[in-house]
Amino acid sequence: MRPLFTHEIGSMAKPPWRVKPFRGKPLDDNDLEHAREWGGRLGVEEQDELLELLAKRDGFTAEEKDRIVRFSSLFGVRLQERAGLDLVWDGEQHRVEMYEYPVRRMGGFAFRGHVRSFDDKYYRKASCVARPSLEAPYHTEEYRTIASFARREVKIPVTGAYTLVDWSFDEHYGGGVAPGARDVGQTRKEARARFLYDVAGDIVHPNLCSLHEAGARFLQIDEPAATTKRDEIPEFIEATRLSVGDLAGKAFFTVHICFSNYDLLFPRLTELEGVLDEVHLEYANRDSREPGVSKDKRIGYGILDFLKGTAFVVGLGVLDVHTDFIEPPELIRDRILFACEVVGDPGRVFVAPDCGLRTRTWEVAFAKLSNMVAGRDLAAERLGL
Image 1 (cartoon, rainbow, N blue to C red):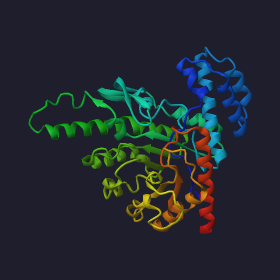
Image 2 (cartoon, rainbow, N blue to C red):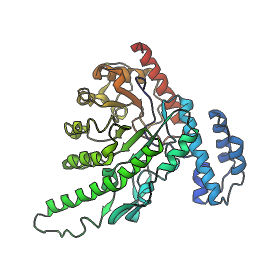
Image 3 (cartoon, one colour):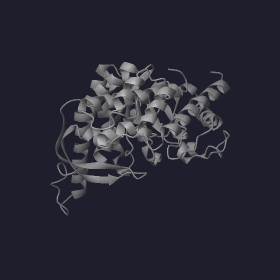
Image 4 (cartoon, helix red, strand yellow):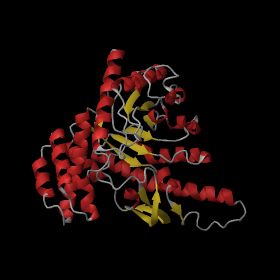
C-alpha cells in the first residue's frame, strides 16, 4: 500500500431513485435526471439499462428493486473511483443504516420504535430478548457484488459489537437483575459483558470470517459508541479482540471511532496492537480552517501525540462531514503534513473523511473527496513521495 493511502471511511447518501421505490413513492423527472447526470459524470457503463428500468417510475417488483440496489452500489463505487480513492466501497447502498440493517438479520432481537440520531435522522432501536444468533452472514453477498465491478481494492465496514450492544435495550441478560438487589452494579456489569462478548463471538466474528473467506482483505469495524461509558473501555477492548479472533494478521483491520473523548481510549487501546492495523479517528471537525502546519493552526490533531508511539496506522480524518464547506486541497495538504511530522512516517498515515458522508449530497461529497485526493497528492509531492 502506498503512503497516504486514501479511502472513504463510512456511508454516503442514497440517490433518490434508490430511496423512493422502497418507500412506495413514484419517481419524478428530477430523479431520472439525477441518474442520467451522474451516470454520465461517472462513466457508468450500464446507464441506459438503469434509465430503462427507472422509466417505469412506480410499482417496481422485488427483482427490479434488487437491480436498483445493484445500480446504486455501482454508482457509489464509481463515484469513489472517479474521485481518485485508493480503497473503495459503495457507501452503504445495500443497507438501511449501520444499526438496523445488521440487527434485522439476527435472532434474539425485537424492535421497539424509532429514536433520533443526528441531523434529524432516525433509526429503529431494538431490544435483546434472547441470546443473539446469526442465521447467515449478512455482508458477504454485498462484498461479492461490489467486488464484481470495482476497479480498485474493496473494503467492507461492519458495525462493531460494542456499538450494537450499546445502541440496544437489554431484556435478556440484565432483565432479571432486580433494582436494589445486593451487588446490583456488579451483577449488571457482568450481564452486559456477557451480552457484549456473545455479540462479538457469535455475530461479528462469523461475519468477518465469511467476508475473509469470500476474498475481502480490508475490513473495518465501526465503533462510534466505543467511549460512551468510560468504565467499559476494557470490555470494548476485549470485544474487539473476540471479534477479530484468529483473523488477526490475515486481513487489514481498521477500527473507526468518531466524535468521542479519545483520551479515554489510552493507554488501553495499545492492547490491540497486532489485532488491529489502523485506528481511524475524527480530527477535521475539531480543527481550524486556516492553512498551516503549526500546532496553533492544527488544533484538532492533538490526539496524534497518543498514537505516534504505537504500532497502528493512523487513520487521519481530514474532511468535516457535518458541513458543506469544501476543504481546499491546500488545507488538506497541511493537515496531512502536520500528521506526518508528528507520526514520523508517511507510511503510517492513511487519509479519509472524519466519518461517513451520508448527510451530504453527492455533489458535495464528490467535491470533498476529489479535493482530499488532490490534497494528498500535494502532501506527497512536498514529502518527495
